[in-house]
Amino acid sequence: MYKDKILRLLQSSKEGFISGEELARKCGISRTMVWKHIKSLERDGFGIQAVPSRGYCITSVPDILRPGDIKLGLKTRVVGKEIELLPEVASTNTRAMERASNGAPEGTVVIAEVQTGGKGRLGRKWISPKGNLYLSLILRPDIPMHKAPLITLMGAVAVAEAIRKQCALNAAIKWPNDVLISGKKVSGLLTEMSAEQDRVRHIVLGIGVDVNMELGVLSPDIRELTTTLSVEAGEKIDRNVLLREILRDLDHWYQVFLSNPQDVLSEWKSLNFTLGNRVVVSGAGDTLDGVAQGVDNDGRLIIRLDDGAIRTVAAGDVTMKKKR
Ligand code: BTN
Image (cartoon, rainbow, N blue to C red; front, side, top):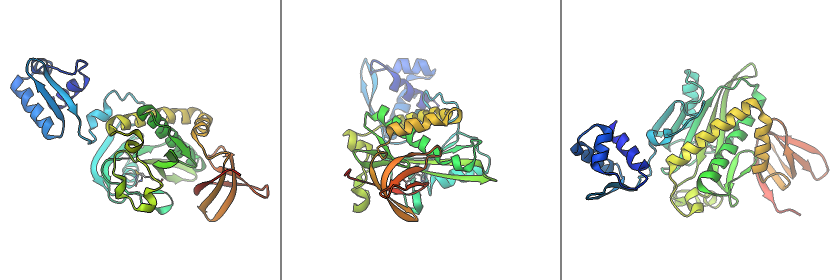
């Protein structure tokens, strides 16, 4: 599409300005057609400055996800080979689970601008207004079911690293897979799977990242535990660029997971701040109070209780306590 090509040329113009003549030549269309496409981009929300004898220059981009931008230079092996971008869906995880059952290839990503029934861990809701990222990745690793939690840890590593690189923010991981900045949650991951005789058939790795939303849409109790990337960075974040980086990092860490899962665990450990702290773990039946000692090879949290007993926990919520 010429409009997309014009957008790409404007975005990659190093001098800032690119003349109508050059755009026309590179696209093989008339200058009048270029002008019409520029007007159409403006209607889409792009700010475009036109200066006689210099040409056109992008001054602002609208905060909408665009397939062309997400895929720009995305040289991944598996992740994002197929992308489904929806304006609204109940839950990208539910949609991805359906698509996986219907044979969607590994690496397919379902993305939505808004979720009306976003799902969180432990049966909670995930509030999903405009301005954030909601995506679900279909994977088909040949692994036993008990190794599936490692995929979620892998996802948390990829998201934390993408945020660190793209937004220069100090993202860290709280067990099992919350990504936090300055102690507040900015991203959560929810893995769902289908299995047969203890082997994984497919896994859907769902990721929600709070990027540009207004924190005011959240209820006060959730709001005080939550932050957004734009609040932390002090500026609006380009969601297309961040999403592309997340897909790249997912692709990288998935390859690492397949070849050497221990490397995923070491990276997770270096990004996590749960281990070594006094914690209370709830939501896993009983409540455990002790020191987070480590994670085992399947990603379960190892806790040393005050009486010295060691317990491992596969799911739950961790609250950090001040060190004594
Ligand atoms: C958590 O409770 O921390 C996990 C939140 C996971 C939310 C994401 S948003 C995309 C995907 N679709 C869903 O319905 N949930 C996950």
